[in-house]
Length: 484
Image (cartoon, rainbow, N blue to C red; front, side, top):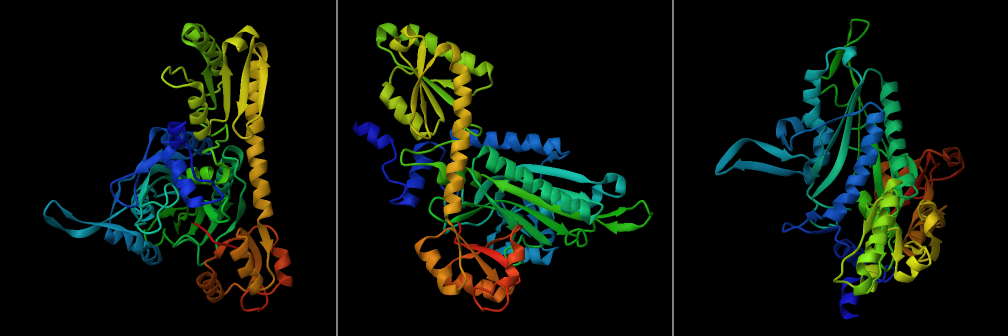
């Protein structure tokens, strides 16, 4: 029992959320700490989740005529500074390379925080005519930003895996359509596969991507009441095409500056999975995103081992024929109870137990990870039942998270109420805002909460409100929250 206790999660989620989170990351073998502060090592189990996320997105990108490319990691300082607002916004986060061996470089090189200023001078060479448009490229790579103080595995690290898309269009309307298309692809991934409900809207000008005309965002609510930015899609307008001279010859035989977008999600989605769905036992993975959807555990004594393992393999074979991701745990050095604990900790959606009695009764025991509900199912309908239960788990996790989100959206009509909600309850708080960045800045300084988004819906009601801070007439309804 001592070894079992040590291998499991020994901090309650509601007692110390941060300690619980770190234990889940480490004990489920998603990741480990690297020798350099702010960096983590992604272990095979964590990387397999990222691969599943990547495969879902990659398929959708290719279906919508995006192509994959690759960009190097080093950016000359002269390129990074070509778009002044962008350069100023990223400078505090940039790692700089200043030497090769013992030789000083003539120009500093930035380790890529994002690829706009690296890609766009190259795009200007590739684009000359309207026939070259639209150009829609996605990069699967890592980015580096100097996150040294408030680090958290997957959520805030100095290097992270992500995808960043960059598109170039002939018209602003096409660029606007692209921004919304990508936001919807992200929503599909996060809500339909990760089972995490979202709020959609615009970032304020203060919080938008530096250099963008506007930024659209998807915001999720974690179990501790803090918000997490899950994905963003940016309309860059012509703010980069002009300094980087991305022009094209139009059908009218005139030169025009192009319209651009950029967008991305990162492995912080894995952090969100942990925080939203995890429980005191560890991970709880939605089936559509789980690298292993079903684990089959044969339960045997030595004399029965070969026979029972054979039956477990038959079950797995049938499940695989229906494209279910299955693993048979036939390790003899661990007890069945130890295996049950390990797979619960790792969040496998469905466990199938197979023992001699089950074989004699032509059945198997199915155990759901989300509810711990057990059921005995006849062998003839096992695959059909597993498919049905996996879909039930997927839906249940989303509905459970949606109730959590809806229960933690509040409304404040005055500043004292806003502060009280943030201190006592947390979550999202809807309030009127005059649109002045000074009010926005003071609220963040005094409460630690910023404007997470300006929702697409419900803006008609803002006319009857006043600003939560200065009490001037409201121009917009904003959603405030403390965030990661």
